[in-house]
Amino acid sequence: MTLSVSQTFAAMSAKLEHIVPPAELMLQAELVVEIEELKRERNAIILGHNYMEPALYHTVPDYTGDSLELARKSAQTDADVIVFCGVEFMAETAKILNPSKTVLIPSDRAGCSLAESISADDVRALKEQFPGVPVVTYVNSYAEVKAETDICCTSGNAKAVVNALDSEQIIFIPDEYLARNIARETGKQLIVPKRNSKGELASGQPASQGTLISWNGKCEVHEQFSVSDINMIRKQFPEAVILAHPECPPEVCEASDYSGSTSKMIDYVKNGAAKQYVLMTECSMGDNIAAENKDKELLRLCSVRCPHMAQISLEMTRNALRDLKHEVTLPEDILVKAKKSLDRMLEIA
Ligand code: 13P
Ligand code: SF4
Image 1: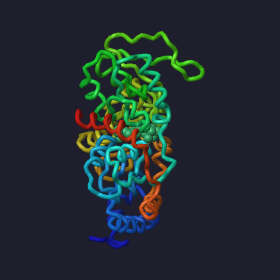
Image 2 (image 1 turned 180 degrees about the vertical axis):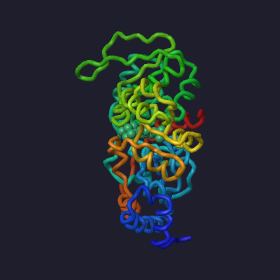
Image 3 (image 1 turned 135 degrees about the vertical axis):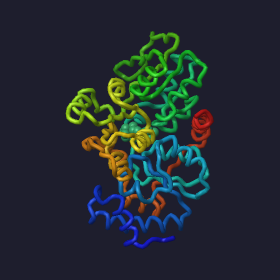
Image 4 (image 1 turned 60 degrees about the vertical axis):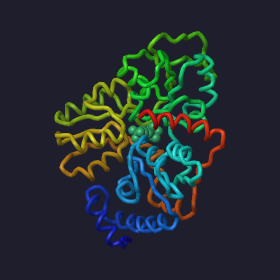
């Protein structure tokens, strides 16, 4: 059924009136109606990551979720076009899992500091330094890196993937903090191979038994959180439950009450008995959760936004569907090799 602009505005207001100003909601409602029409014309679906801004997150996506859930959804769809409202590595993942479909990303400037931190050459150098050691790559990486990888993981299944590998040593790239958090949870040692001033790997760092060999990639958003933030929050809001994404530094995750993927954090708040929550993650997600849990208070840390996720708006999503841009294309050999590492992940977890 097609909703009119005023019906769409009413539905959006019911959910978002305390979060998005009404004048803005009216403009957004017009875009929502346009996008719904374009979706039908193009036989398209929209996948929306949990970090999307509230007016987008709560309207046009057919599915919302964390990286793992959206990868699963993109592997299952029979739509002709997939519009990925998220960042580039996520849209690439959808393309790798659906090579015959048209995959669009609304902005061609939605990168990720973790994905930028490592190249396929870096992975080949690591494999030379640690021959025969399996490579686990966080999905926050580009296709060329996934193509050099034995198996991918997300924040939602990283521990399960590491535990499923029958190997005393594992190369786990590129997120050093996620690697440290997983090492702590699985009781493994962690080493980060040293690099010289040119970024080349320095030799002479043998890995011992039970070791995760990581990389020094960081999420530019989550690395900003500190234990002193947590101490201040606890002092001012002693009742608040603190949740941290596993891309945060390990001491932040340890000092928090819970750590999990974006969807796991959403479920935790939804099912939690407490009234007040603080999320150590991208600010928009607090708005999205608040809109659906009106009995709970989300204390937002809104100076912390992912500049890449923030590129994606309803207007750009409309433009993407209208003009069929920006299409994700990848070389055939990379697609084939990268798909193996994602398929293995989806089989395990
Ligand atoms: P999730 O898989 O937990 O949604 O995380 C993706 C991400 O980029 C977090 O910064
Ligand atoms: Fe990348 Fe961090 Fe943004 Fe997630 S929040 S997309 S890891 S830069």
